[in-house]
Image 1 (spheres, rainbow, N blue to C red):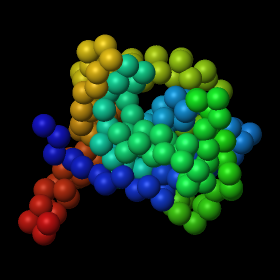
Image 2: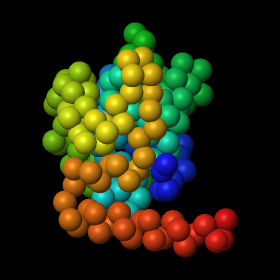
Image 3: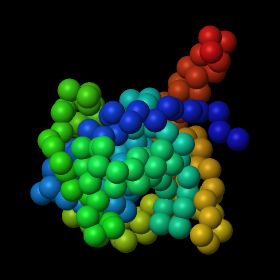
Image 4: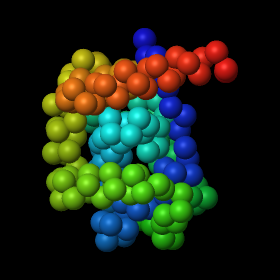
Length: 179
């Protein structure tokens, strides 16, 4: 059972989506976007003690994804979000990113993730996420999904990241008394 929880921030998620789409010349495949955001959340959590967008992550056939992010992207067809879906799988920006919603550390991590992985095909990115211990530990049955606890994001990471995990657990445990 997962002890670490982070609420999904839909405003930040919309801006992070727009930032990545803009960086990718105005459009991006939906699968590639969710993989990049998972990798960004994982890295940001390990470095700074919180994800960029948050939410509840699940391991699914094509790799890890925030359930709330997937719902948000599915709403893009309604026309109420600052991006839209074309040809079922491609996200296109309707406006530019408002970076005021994103911290400098958010932007730095998004930039680093895009530099490392932005050139990689969406299906290869999916394979890369399948190679992570977090996914392997929580691999779902075909067509299903399985909760991917934030604690498992740290399975492939170094000692410094594991120290961050201990701090996050302590902090969240301390907040239980106030909620």
